Image 1 (cartoon, rainbow, N blue to C red):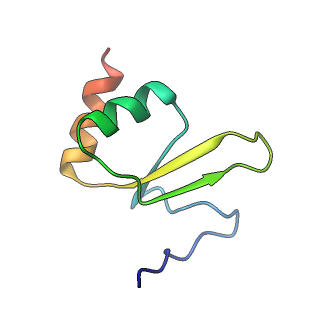
Image 2 (spheres, rainbow, N blue to C red):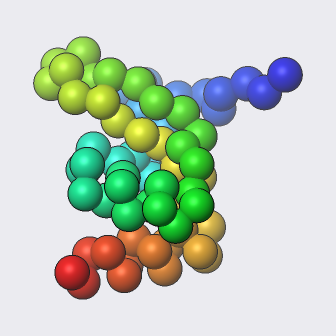
Image 3 (cartoon, rainbow, N blue to C red):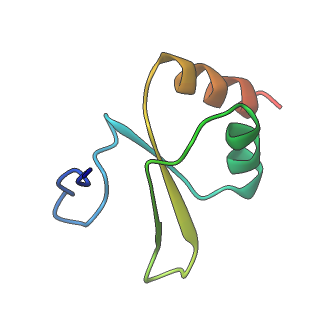
Amino acid sequence: MTYAPTRTKNNQYPAEKYYSCYSPRVLTYLLNKGFKPYATFVNVKTLKTCYVFEKGLELNSAITEVSKR
């Protein structure tokens, strides 16, 4: 059984370990690259779905690559 990490007091995943993705364009790119979300939740204020990915060298490179487009 896998447990979610402890969230910060504002109910977010720590930014130094996790990447929160709200962009459908970035999400599609990451999924096509083979990345799988660690967690998914709906932001109660905006009602937008957030996909949380564990940070790593490959993910960081992919985010940099997609942000250049």
